[in-house]
Image 1 (spheres, rainbow, N blue to C red):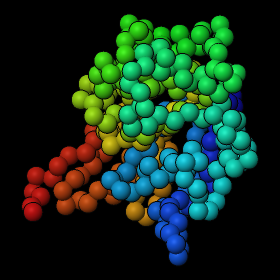
Image 2: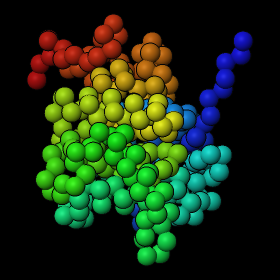
Image 3: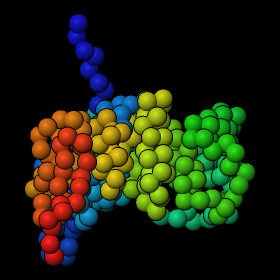
Length: 268
């Protein structure tokens, strides 16, 4: 019996990312070849300053690529109009929203902007999608609260609901667990996993919570100084990918437990 081939929603070919200076380009990472499958949760991990945010900004056109190609639904990213991209890809950042005086419902409703007419009127269909996004993220009891009344964890769920209301094939989140305690870090990542399965959307997030990502993600993208590799967590563990993520004089990866530990004999 043949296994059904997974649909690839986003892929890159020989992608190079970085910055343009007055005289030259500064390449952060190159030869990036990744494929994101529909209905999966993908974690992007790596050491501080390795280029995770640069990669996400490049995939979302916030920052131009240096070389290579990015495709969404087999269409080159640079061939998308702004409106087409807004209906295909949604982005959740860690920055504070412009006005925390909005209610949670009003914040989530902003996700419908690509679909509303020029005066922003919401149809019954729009309201139905907004309500569903609120229910999926378990914030129905919060929808009439002002955003400034929310905890960091509640605010993050509201931002995820806004991305769901945007109804895109791909949701990309830049460090969604920042400022959260361990319980809420795990809660948000489990919520993202649940949403990927229930909505069949492709969800990519960057995180420093590597141990949690290994446990909860369908696939991971690992950025090191020398390469960018991707695959299922269990395969990346067996390939020794996580062993070289941090200097071994202080941090070691335990392949048996799938987690990092501090080396007791480390000295400064």
